Each structure stands twice: as structure tokens, then as C-alpha cells.
Image (cartoon, rainbow, N blue to C red; front, side):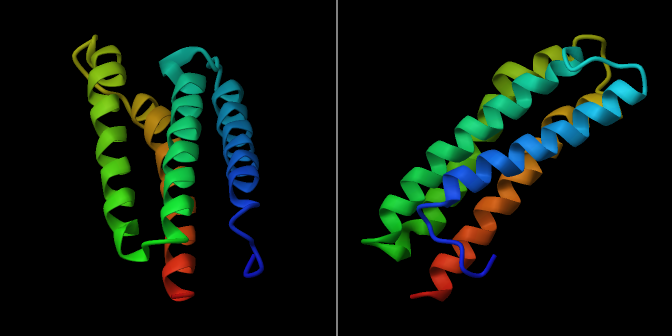
Length: 128
């Protein structure tokens, strides 16, 4: 993966998120759940779209001002958490408790996207 070009990054992010979703959905289905439970597919879709947008901004900025990449990265993470608390949290908290399955439904795709963006940020900063 050391030869990953930044132009390939959005496609690789999509494939990574699809793989993560497939594995996660497989586990959920194996234990008798549904991909419609706990906003699972919506969480993957949201995290994919948000990460793709943040990634596009980071890649555009990387060419000109590498010193701003960290702010874009952190700002994007802040916006994703804000979106979580506005749209996902009320549904998860509706029964008074956030179960492990509900927690994983949002934060597994969040961590996958975060790890991917972190890898690219570090790669970009190391090339400076």
C-alpha cells in the first residue's frame, strides 16, 4: 500500500468501506439481526460520504497547503460527531440505553473511515 496514489484513495476508501460493511452485515445477519437494525447501512453510507468529502478537501489542500491538513481532518471529525448526535443518537437512545450493537453500528464504520483518513494524512505529511 506504500505506492497508493492520492488519486486512487477515494476508490480504495469505497472498497474498504464495502468490505467493512460486508463483514459487519455478515456478523449481524449471523446473529439473527438485519442490516436495517440500528441504522447499520445508514451509518456506513453516512461515514463513507462524509469521509469521501473530507478526503477530497484534504487531497485538494494537500497540494497547496499541507499545514492546514490537520485542521481539515479535525474539523471533519467534529462535523461527523455533530451529525451523529443530531441524527443517530436520538434513535439509539430512544429506549433509554445504547446497546453494544447500536454503538458498533455507528462507530465501526466511523473507525474504518478515520483509520483510512489518518493513514492518508500521515502519508501526505511524510512526503512534505
